[in-house]
Image: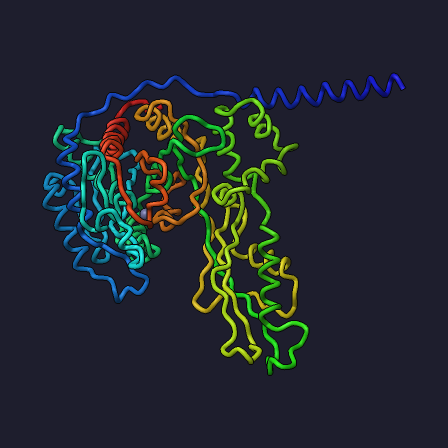
Length: 492
Ligand SMILES: [Zn+2]
């Protein structure tokens, strides 16, 4: 008996030691960060130019016949007029009529170039919500703190910040060591198949690859939640894949006066309920692990212990993360039934019921594995699970290594420009133009150096999109500092 107790006592001590050692091991790993010396920029002029850009309704529409390309021509004209130095110093090419590609030749041809990206198109305005906008969405309204309008954050803020930074550096007589390419797409919001894809094809045809690529994606927010009370810069090192599946229930139909036990509607509804009750499994070993590791040092002892001991608390962690839509989207392929259609008349049993379910695929899953899992969950031979006509499946983007020198470089620059910020790598739930560039660099980072305030993220694609003038200024200074830092002998 005594021996038994001794053994249990020993085991408990051993167990607690492992928990604590793991917890302490992922304690703070931060290196000494020196605050950046930021360049003074003429923010008033920069705001004026951004405001002019927001006035131009460069709207992407799913049906490309409805796109008014004249606005894109006007947007190009505006850039040309406002940034003559950039257009004179850099090589500028128009790609597939409306995307732009700039090349700033570096002095050192032995170094791989870098690529900065942004897009000039914006999503349409939901006409039903138009009267809820504080200012008209294409007015470019500016007040003392804020510039308002569709595209302010997504993504003209970054686009103008990049143009301002290049223009500023040219005025200072700066020349980069490493060649810098800049790609502005014109159809990111509808997949980038006419813009970014053509730019990527151009690079492929020229045999050009990149040291790293920086495009829109995560931002800097003071509210990631989860117990971190510092600013968080979210740098996406991958983006989720995509597939929509069609679920079809077929039966003989008939008159509603003598229905069978289940109609096609009931059969299909049951399948959809099963999918909602059985979320796809979490992928706690993928990029989410990098994310949790980056966050862990900032957390209190108990949450840190949970993160450091996923072998024991994996289930608990999944439960906590899955509790809200954003956390859930980070850990697993999400399941979203989006269309349900059946029936034409109230007294006729439909012979067929159809639903569409959209999945955003986490690294670790694939379109094929999702189809397989959906069939297993639905587990009903009366339901056909298939891809709709014209549907496509896209794999998640390869995961860029957050331990690479390129990621570290970017991470240090973020912390130097935004002191006290925690840089967290993760997966972008939405798609960006970088999906076309995955073969062109192992280091693709999706991050906009724009600080957001509470609620700003909801405004993207929504009502009252806006950018803070201080945040825009800091964004310009970030790009200037990043490009200057590329010229330093030792980047890390
Ligand atoms: Zn965007």
